[in-house]
Amino acid sequence: MYQVGEYIVHPGQGVCKVDEIVSEPQETYMLMPVGGRHPMRISFPVSGEARLRPVLSRGEAEELIGEYAQMDTDSFTERSLALEEEHFKNTIRRGTCRDSVRVVKTFRKRIAEVRARNKKPPVAYERILKQASERSLSELAVALGTTQEDVRALFESQSGEDLSAN
Image 1 (cartoon, rainbow, N blue to C red):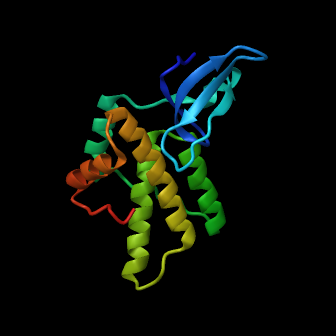
Image 2 (image 1 turned 180 degrees about the horizontal axis):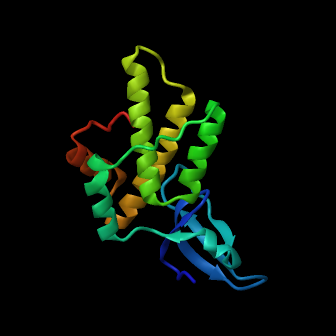
């Protein structure tokens, strides 16, 4: 069971802080999403806590950032863009921070490849990239006790890429 003050990752809301644990009528976590424009406190039943996971440790976050340049992209493709989008959104929602970072790298590469052919990337690519980027940056920022901009700068220094477009 998580404790008040701990940071966890909710499948739909991303990184949240456990604000309170209510015991009546059923045990429920009261979670406050981190970041976002207008975060609203949400309730989540303790009985469903298997769907929650703890935020990365500082060491795991530093290791993940250090491995970014060598990280492989995801080669998953499907016969329709909608099925691909569904796959990657599920990966972001149910996967680890490493999975979200891999999705970011994958879609940065795909978008660059499309633009290299003087084409406009599909809106779905931009949407997936944005969602994965927000999810991973917020978790890494909490793990490292810093801002999302500082985490982005760490990735840039490790990879030599300009990530400001994301």
